[in-house]
Length: 239
Image 1: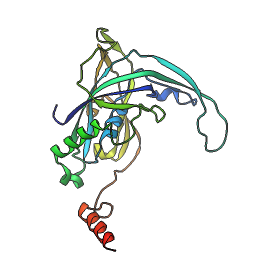
Image 2 (image 1 turned 45 degrees about the vertical axis):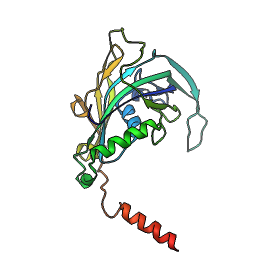
Image 3 (image 1 turned 135 degrees about the vertical axis):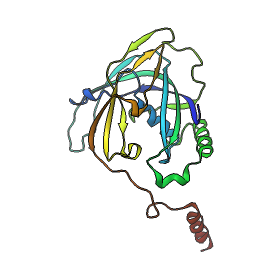
Image 4 (image 1 turned 60 degrees about the vertical axis):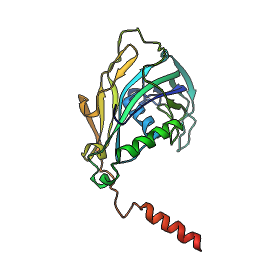
Protein backbone atom coordinates (compact mmCIF):
# COMPACT_ATOMS: atom_id res chain seq x y z
CA UNK A 1 0.00 0.00 0.00
CA UNK A 2 1.13 3.53 -0.75
CA UNK A 3 2.90 5.17 2.21
CA UNK A 4 2.49 1.91 4.10
CA UNK A 5 4.51 0.10 6.74
CA UNK A 6 4.30 -3.44 8.09
CA UNK A 7 5.66 -4.35 11.48
CA UNK A 8 5.39 -6.78 14.37
CA UNK A 9 4.87 -5.52 17.92
CA UNK A 10 5.39 -7.88 20.85
CA UNK A 11 5.69 -7.81 24.60
CA UNK A 12 5.13 -9.82 27.80
CA UNK A 13 1.89 -8.02 28.72
CA UNK A 14 -0.85 -5.88 27.16
CA UNK A 15 -3.84 -4.02 28.61
CA UNK A 16 -6.43 -2.73 26.13
CA UNK A 17 -8.90 -1.61 28.77
CA UNK A 18 -12.61 -2.23 28.34
CA UNK A 19 -14.02 1.11 29.64
CA UNK A 20 -16.99 -0.66 31.21
CA UNK A 21 -14.65 -2.29 33.74
CA UNK A 22 -13.06 0.98 34.94
CA UNK A 23 -16.09 2.23 36.89
CA UNK A 24 -15.16 0.34 40.05
CA UNK A 25 -11.42 0.99 39.79
CA UNK A 26 -10.69 -2.39 38.19
CA UNK A 27 -9.36 -2.91 34.66
CA UNK A 28 -10.11 -5.81 32.33
CA UNK A 29 -8.48 -6.00 28.92
CA UNK A 30 -10.21 -6.59 25.62
CA UNK A 31 -9.17 -9.83 23.91
CA UNK A 32 -7.53 -7.98 21.02
CA UNK A 33 -5.98 -4.54 20.51
CA UNK A 34 -8.20 -1.62 19.58
CA UNK A 35 -7.65 0.52 16.51
CA UNK A 36 -6.71 3.47 18.73
CA UNK A 37 -4.09 1.48 20.63
CA UNK A 38 -2.43 0.36 17.39
CA UNK A 39 -2.64 3.87 15.98
CA UNK A 40 -0.81 5.07 19.10
CA UNK A 41 1.94 2.54 18.41
CA UNK A 42 2.27 3.76 14.80
CA UNK A 43 2.46 7.36 16.07
CA UNK A 44 5.14 6.32 18.57
CA UNK A 45 7.17 5.02 15.63
CA UNK A 46 6.78 8.32 13.74
CA UNK A 47 4.27 11.16 13.96
CA UNK A 48 3.76 14.64 12.59
CA UNK A 49 0.57 16.76 12.83
CA UNK A 50 0.68 16.92 9.03
CA UNK A 51 -0.21 13.22 8.91
CA UNK A 52 -3.12 10.99 9.87
CA UNK A 53 -2.09 7.42 10.64
CA UNK A 54 -4.50 4.76 9.35
CA UNK A 55 -4.35 1.18 10.70
CA UNK A 56 -5.53 -1.27 8.04
CA UNK A 57 -5.19 -4.73 9.58
CA UNK A 58 -3.86 -6.59 12.60
CA UNK A 59 -2.92 -10.28 12.77
CA UNK A 60 -3.06 -12.04 16.14
CA UNK A 61 0.02 -14.24 16.20
CA UNK A 62 -0.24 -15.97 19.59
CA UNK A 63 -3.03 -17.58 21.61
CA UNK A 64 -5.16 -15.14 23.63
CA UNK A 65 -4.25 -15.70 27.29
CA UNK A 66 -5.02 -13.56 30.32
CA UNK A 67 -3.41 -13.04 33.70
CA UNK A 68 -4.76 -11.10 36.71
CA UNK A 69 -2.56 -9.04 39.02
CA UNK A 70 -3.14 -7.14 42.23
CA UNK A 71 -1.85 -3.58 41.79
CA UNK A 72 -1.80 -0.41 43.88
CA UNK A 73 -3.07 2.51 41.74
CA UNK A 74 -1.49 5.89 42.38
CA UNK A 75 -3.87 8.02 44.45
CA UNK A 76 -2.67 11.60 44.58
CA UNK A 77 -5.11 12.41 47.38
CA UNK A 78 -3.70 9.66 49.59
CA UNK A 79 -5.01 6.19 50.27
CA UNK A 80 -3.83 2.63 49.94
CA UNK A 81 -6.19 0.98 47.45
CA UNK A 82 -5.61 -2.48 46.04
CA UNK A 83 -7.10 -3.08 42.58
CA UNK A 84 -7.27 -6.10 40.30
CA UNK A 85 -6.08 -5.66 36.69
CA UNK A 86 -6.45 -8.40 34.08
CA UNK A 87 -3.79 -8.30 31.35
CA UNK A 88 -3.15 -10.17 28.13
CA UNK A 89 -0.09 -12.37 28.52
CA UNK A 90 2.75 -12.92 26.00
CA UNK A 91 1.36 -11.11 22.96
CA UNK A 92 2.55 -10.60 19.40
CA UNK A 93 0.74 -8.74 16.60
CA UNK A 94 1.55 -8.10 12.96
CA UNK A 95 0.24 -4.70 11.88
CA UNK A 96 -0.32 -3.13 8.48
CA UNK A 97 -0.74 0.67 8.42
CA UNK A 98 -0.27 3.73 6.21
CA UNK A 99 -0.49 7.50 6.46
CA UNK A 100 -2.51 10.15 4.68
CA UNK A 101 -2.16 13.91 4.73
CA UNK A 102 -4.48 15.69 7.13
CA UNK A 103 -6.94 17.79 5.05
CA UNK A 104 -8.04 19.66 8.18
CA UNK A 105 -4.59 21.17 8.70
CA UNK A 106 -4.15 23.71 5.87
CA UNK A 107 -1.68 25.52 8.13
CA UNK A 108 0.72 22.60 7.55
CA UNK A 109 0.22 22.20 3.79
CA UNK A 110 3.85 23.21 3.21
CA UNK A 111 4.96 19.99 4.95
CA UNK A 112 3.11 17.57 2.65
CA UNK A 113 6.16 15.83 1.25
CA UNK A 114 5.12 12.21 0.76
CA UNK A 115 8.51 10.64 0.06
CA UNK A 116 10.20 12.48 2.92
CA UNK A 117 7.72 11.29 5.55
CA UNK A 118 7.58 7.72 4.24
CA UNK A 119 11.36 7.36 4.23
CA UNK A 120 11.68 8.83 7.73
CA UNK A 121 8.95 6.53 8.96
CA UNK A 122 10.70 3.44 7.61
CA UNK A 123 14.00 4.49 9.21
CA UNK A 124 12.26 5.11 12.53
CA UNK A 125 10.65 1.66 12.38
CA UNK A 126 14.03 0.07 11.65
CA UNK A 127 15.38 1.81 14.77
CA UNK A 128 12.51 0.59 16.99
CA UNK A 129 10.46 3.79 17.01
CA UNK A 130 11.02 7.38 18.07
CA UNK A 131 9.16 7.12 21.37
CA UNK A 132 8.47 4.41 23.92
CA UNK A 133 6.32 1.59 22.59
CA UNK A 134 3.69 0.13 24.89
CA UNK A 135 0.61 -2.04 24.47
CA UNK A 136 -2.39 -0.15 25.80
CA UNK A 137 -0.88 0.92 29.13
CA UNK A 138 2.44 2.46 30.11
CA UNK A 139 3.45 -0.51 32.25
CA UNK A 140 3.11 -2.84 29.22
CA UNK A 141 6.42 -2.13 27.50
CA UNK A 142 6.73 -3.52 23.98
CA UNK A 143 9.06 -3.64 20.98
CA UNK A 144 8.55 -3.12 17.24
CA UNK A 145 10.46 -4.29 14.21
CA UNK A 146 9.73 -4.50 10.46
CA UNK A 147 8.06 -7.63 9.08
CA UNK A 148 6.12 -8.87 6.06
CA UNK A 149 2.44 -8.97 6.99
CA UNK A 150 1.12 -12.54 6.72
CA UNK A 151 4.47 -14.31 6.96
CA UNK A 152 5.02 -16.95 9.62
CA UNK A 153 2.57 -19.18 11.46
CA UNK A 154 -0.18 -17.66 13.59
CA UNK A 155 -2.20 -19.46 16.27
CA UNK A 156 -5.56 -18.59 14.65
CA UNK A 157 -4.62 -19.14 11.00
CA UNK A 158 -7.24 -21.88 10.44
CA UNK A 159 -9.62 -20.91 13.22
CA UNK A 160 -12.44 -19.39 11.18
CA UNK A 161 -14.51 -16.44 12.41
CA UNK A 162 -14.61 -15.11 15.98
CA UNK A 163 -17.15 -12.37 16.75
CA UNK A 164 -15.76 -10.05 19.40
CA UNK A 165 -18.89 -8.06 20.28
CA UNK A 166 -19.10 -4.28 20.67
CA UNK A 167 -15.73 -2.62 21.26
CA UNK A 168 -14.26 0.84 21.31
CA UNK A 169 -12.76 1.50 17.88
CA UNK A 170 -11.03 4.78 18.70
CA UNK A 171 -11.28 8.50 19.40
CA UNK A 172 -12.04 11.34 16.99
CA UNK A 173 -9.95 14.43 17.70
CA UNK A 174 -11.04 17.81 16.27
CA UNK A 175 -7.84 18.32 14.26
CA UNK A 176 -8.60 15.09 12.36
CA UNK A 177 -12.35 15.53 11.82
CA UNK A 178 -12.75 19.29 11.48
CA UNK A 179 -15.46 19.19 14.18
CA UNK A 180 -14.88 21.08 17.43
CA UNK A 181 -15.63 18.12 19.65
CA UNK A 182 -14.04 15.00 21.10
CA UNK A 183 -15.84 11.83 20.01
CA UNK A 184 -15.59 8.09 20.67
CA UNK A 185 -16.22 5.45 18.00
CA UNK A 186 -17.76 1.99 18.57
CA UNK A 187 -17.87 -1.03 16.29
CA UNK A 188 -18.32 -4.84 16.29
CA UNK A 189 -15.17 -6.50 14.87
CA UNK A 190 -14.91 -10.03 13.49
CA UNK A 191 -11.58 -11.86 13.54
CA UNK A 192 -11.19 -14.11 10.49
CA UNK A 193 -8.39 -16.67 10.71
CA UNK A 194 -6.53 -14.43 13.12
CA UNK A 195 -6.88 -11.22 11.05
CA UNK A 196 -9.01 -8.18 11.87
CA UNK A 197 -9.60 -5.71 9.05
CA UNK A 198 -10.38 -2.32 10.56
CA UNK A 199 -13.11 0.00 9.36
CA UNK A 200 -11.81 3.47 8.59
CA UNK A 201 -12.73 5.97 11.33
CA UNK A 202 -15.25 7.73 9.09
CA UNK A 203 -16.95 4.38 8.36
CA UNK A 204 -17.68 3.49 12.01
CA UNK A 205 -21.46 3.21 12.49
CA UNK A 206 -21.64 4.45 16.11
CA UNK A 207 -20.12 7.75 17.21
CA UNK A 208 -20.71 9.38 20.61
CA UNK A 209 -19.74 12.95 21.56
CA UNK A 210 -17.63 13.18 24.72
CA UNK A 211 -16.82 16.90 25.05
CA UNK A 212 -16.35 20.16 23.19
CA UNK A 213 -12.76 20.71 22.06
CA UNK A 214 -10.87 22.92 19.60
CA UNK A 215 -7.73 21.92 17.67
CA UNK A 216 -4.39 23.56 18.34
CA UNK A 217 -3.23 25.77 15.46
CA UNK A 218 0.38 26.15 14.37
CA UNK A 219 1.61 29.52 13.12
CA UNK A 220 4.54 31.90 13.40
CA UNK A 221 3.72 32.54 17.06
CA UNK A 222 4.34 28.95 18.19
CA UNK A 223 6.50 27.41 15.42
CA UNK A 224 10.12 28.27 14.72
CA UNK A 225 11.70 27.57 11.35
CA UNK A 226 14.85 25.48 10.93
CA UNK A 227 16.66 28.50 9.45
CA UNK A 228 15.96 30.51 12.60
CA UNK A 229 17.23 27.69 14.80
CA UNK A 230 20.45 27.40 12.79
CA UNK A 231 20.94 31.17 12.99
CA UNK A 232 20.56 31.05 16.77
CA UNK A 233 23.06 28.16 17.04
CA UNK A 234 25.60 30.00 14.88
CA UNK A 235 25.12 33.18 16.88
CA UNK A 236 25.63 31.26 20.12
CA UNK A 237 28.78 29.65 18.76
CA UNK A 238 30.31 33.04 17.93
CA UNK A 239 29.95 34.27 21.48
